[in-house]
Image (cartoon, rainbow, N blue to C red; front, side):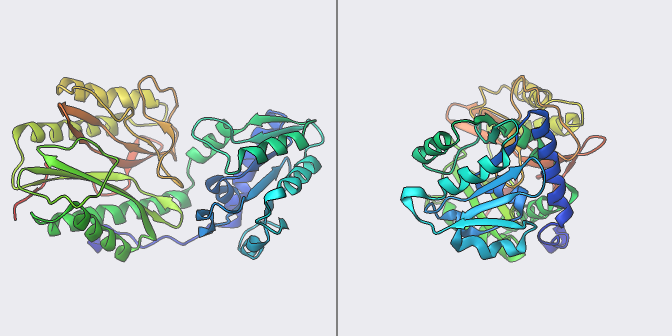
Length: 394
């Protein structure tokens, strides 16, 4: 399967990339009279600092990054993490001995924010949709009280707009993750057998993708059933795959902090006419998405192009609620391809095209591909799915 892969990209990013990201945010801050922004979640922290650690898996300690109106970000972090910033472009790291429940960095964060937000006294935070604050609610209330003379405002729209357009280096990391995933699906097509369990099939693919260069595979789901499946978010289970079954596997591997996210369908023994027609419909729907996805189009345009094909094919509905989304440092990112979506596509955006349909009561068919918007249209980041559903005969 190595013929489907390019060489792994260089890990990390040049300093100039972080300077550019920070400058974009500071331009938007200036337009909104925001003196400083603070981040407390891993993707935003990593995006603007380059600090990459598995320690985020532990919920014990909070981590904060302060971006002032000018200059480099300031890390406000537990003492245990200070040494890790020697590998970043940051020059100022402030720390405290965490865990310290009585004051787990809140006074230090408040003092840092107050120090760099004296002009307009407006502080930005991630307060909008698809965000959260990785800190206890009581600590955020304490922070607001300590900064009572300041206004806390939502900066999430600006941040998601910046992050949605990927640099060339980001695109190559995602492309490699996608190619590894496509090679894993191809490997699975040649090694699936009737009688395997869902779990065995997923493990087989998982190990192959790690062998091919993925760093991890934190998202790997499957579902199966006679003539179709009824969900795309559970599994894998110990259910044995029998003749007449359909199997979907949807996965996202990670390479150097960037994800792939797409699925493939397999039939066992044979595929009946209903599932074959449904597969052909979602394939054609994806083609419609590929044809229309281009700069100047909207997420709503993409949704409508794909849904029109499914509607004509007799879809009973789309239980997923959207037909694709942004992709990058997170498995799913803004924006969503939804009906009436008004997000304008720009070169450098990476999206999934994910048409799905209920083709019979309790039976779904979902198809997904990963694309990057180019100057003139879009480009697949990996090998396209098989035009007809593969049938595992033994």
